[in-house]
Image 1 (cartoon, one colour):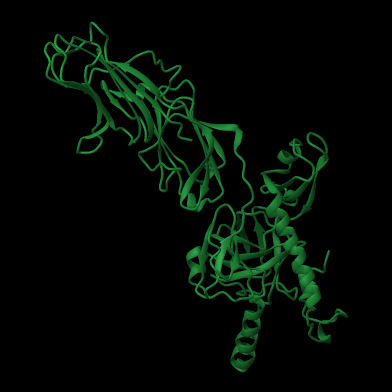
Image 2 (cartoon, rainbow, N blue to C red; image 1 turned 180 degrees about the horizontal axis):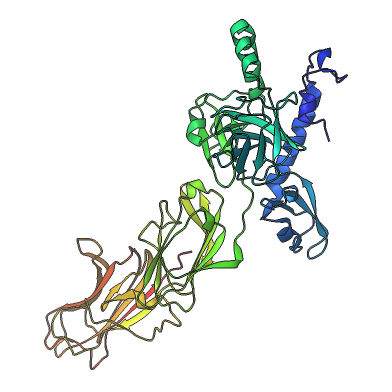
Length: 532
């Protein structure tokens, strides 16, 4: 392992005496340290396919191949969080902790829950001594010393870089303090001495300007520069020495971006004000928790805490529930699984800001036995799995013979299509009218018997669609010298709730009727193509 960063960039020369002179970092040591950091990041990016909340959950899962990588992210024992590697084959062996979670920076929030001199701070990522911590200060401290407790852990005494306690008024409201955890202390990167800083600014403006320039150069050499949002980074001029940046607005962790000279052409990317292009690096894999499915029987607006979960609805007859999905742009790489219980007799409608696959709000419903497995991408929820049970329906239109042009707008009833075998069939008929239950491609056919005393000049059957204001013919067959049966078939796309109006027409002849009683009631068949 190479030398650590705080040794490479120390303030003094190698004999360890601070007063003996300034240290000039060795480029070979810097390259060695940077290569080590990149190797860890690359290893994690390629192999971190597993995430566990606690070490106990990880240790309980030995069904992974040798050398599999996993993260433990939320164990109450902070030291248990980190990157682990599987030792031994599938079903045997153990897990070995290799390193801390690879966060260069951790943001901690002081919301004022403690006191000015006993700060209580929280963070979305476990605190470790291998990461820099940015801590906002809620209010001026009153006395000395000052402590800080992260996420309810043991309070740490805040020390300046030179090891001194913070004086009264040394921490001011709105300050962003940068430091590391060192034993029982939170050690700041810089010293805090307000009076000395003011005197230095008044008496040595040139030195202050030199220090500012040095600080900017040091900041530009960091592996990661952190921006609050993509909007902030887009407007920034980012030094060319920054090969990577981090965006803090993504949940549950910052997202990292790599610099490109030209547009990389694909993926989550943007251009900053200096002309550089930035493309998002792969996120650690997520997994669905099928062992703890969420049972639902009502409308639901899903939020961040519902991600990476399985949601199963039970829906009664004639009921439609709506699942409203969160914006995928905020949760890129996260998963959702939506499912309707096999015994349900109602519908689950999907509402969304961005499309779900090829569907937008109002297009997509699920019925009994169907499910969707989704992953959040930029601009849409991508369908990556699930079960589609295509709608299959046969209906007939019984009644008396008809001796005039017939438009079958009502009177249709299911024929040999019980919901236990074809769960989408009942939703293909609404108040006796035929309709497409959801957007998609459908095979449709219409069969009607016609008899006569004298043969007509011609006769034909067709099915109209009235989903738009103007009537449009989708299938049509024209026949002459009929032998009592008209058959029309076609496969075409239809919008959700588009109506089908089967029609039988003829010209000439005598005694011409739609022979419902002698030949049999007209039959309409519909079969949906699989949607996912």
